[in-house]
Length: 575
Image (cartoon, rainbow, N blue to C red):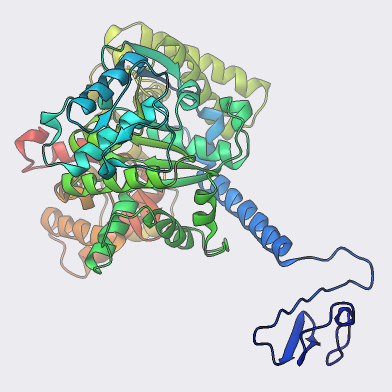
C-alpha cells in the first residue's frame, strides 16, 4: 500500500474531480480533500502483493458466519443435555437429549379443497371478496381495498386464512357470528395420524397441542439441536439449514409487559421479536457476540425456524390474546420462515386460536402406544445405566433387561398401561420401577411416589456444606420438606401468569415464611434456613430448578399443580 500522505497510485488512472485530492491517510484509511461538491470521487485499492483483497462485504460475511457458528454452538450447549433422575444415583444425571428422545406422533385434520371453497364462499356472502370457485387458484381476487394484503402466497388456503383473520380484526362481530370451522378444525375433515417430521413437512407454520408431560418443550429443544447442527435432512427429511430461534412465550410476554409499562408498546409490532431475541440472547449467552441486526437479518432473509414454546404458560387470558396477536403479526411479517408453536389445549382456544389458526396448521400429540412405550423405556434405561456404569456390552444388556421388565409390569395391568401415556408419566413409572416396588395404578399415587423419591435425593446428599449447616437447625424428613413446598406451590399457582417463574429472593421469602409457621423459626434464622433449603432442593431434589440466573420454577408445571392441590387451604377447584 502507499505510504500515508502520498497520493494513491490509482489517482492517475482515474483522476479525481478538479480541485479534489485523494491521499492515503494511514492503514485502511484515505483522505479526500479540496472541492468535492457536485463531484464524483472513485477510489480503487490495489494490493501490491497480488493477494486477494478483503472487501467490506466479505468482512461482513465473515463476521456473520463467525457469529452464526458461535450462536449455533450456544444452542447445542443450552439444549444438548436432558436431566434424568435415577434412584441409584446421588444426583440427577445430565444425558444427551438425542439419546433419550422418542419421536412423537400427532393427529391432524387435513383441509381439503372443499373446505377452502366453503370458507371463501362465506367471505363472498359478506361482500368481502368476489370469488370464482371454478378457478384452481385465487391468484388475484377483486376485493374491498380495505382487505388488500401483500407479501403472502396467493394459494386459496393462504388467502382464505388471511382473509378470515383480517375479517375478525376489522369487525366487532366476534367468532360467534362467523363460522370458524375452516379456521379451526376443517370442515368435514377426518383426522390423520402423522409423525412430527411429516407434520413439519406439510406446513411451514405448525401449532402442536399436547397434554401436560406430552413432551412439547423437549420436542422443540430437539428441533433446535437438529437445526443448529444442520441435520434437518437426515432427521426430519427437510432439506433446510435454518437458524433455530427458541422463544419461551412466557418470557416474550414478560418482554411485552415491560414495554407496556414503559409506554413503548404502541402497537403489537412483529419487530418486537428480533428486539426480544437481541435482549434475551445477551442475557443468557453473554459469551456470544452477535451483530446488532443478527436476528432481524436472518428473519428478513427467511432463514429461521422459530420455536415458540408454551402459549398456555401465559396464564392471563388478555395477555395470552395479546401474545397470540403479536405472534400472528410475526408470522405475517416474516412469512417464509418456519414456525412451530406449542401449547396445552387450554392455552390454544378462544382468542388465541382465532388469531393463530388462519396461519398455523394445528395438530395434537397422540398418547404413547406400545411401540412408543417400548422405544422410550429402552432409551431411558440405556441412558441412565450407561451414564452411571459406562457404555459397554454389559451395561447395555442390563439396560435392555430392566426395560423389558418395566414393560412387562406396565402391560400386565390395564390401569398402569393407561397411566404410561406420555414421556413424563412413563419416566416417573421408570423411577418407581427402579426402586423395586409395585407400580401405582392412579395418577395421584404416581405423583406422590415420584415426589417422595425426588425429595429422597436430599437424603443422598453426602455431607455437603449447605446440608451440614442446615442440619444444625434440626433434621427435616420427607414429610417436612413436602409440607414446606405445598404452600409455596399454592402461592405460585395463585399468582396466575407470573406463577410459572419466581426470583430467588421472592421464593426464599416464601419458604422462610413457612419455616416460621411450621417450626416457629425467628428471624434471621428462618431466612438463612430458607436459603439453605432452596439451595439443596434445587441442586439435589430436582423439584425446583434454576431456569436462569436467580430465577426458579418447578421442574414441571405438573408437580407445581400436584403440590398446590395438596396444600392446606387450597381452593376447591384444585382438590
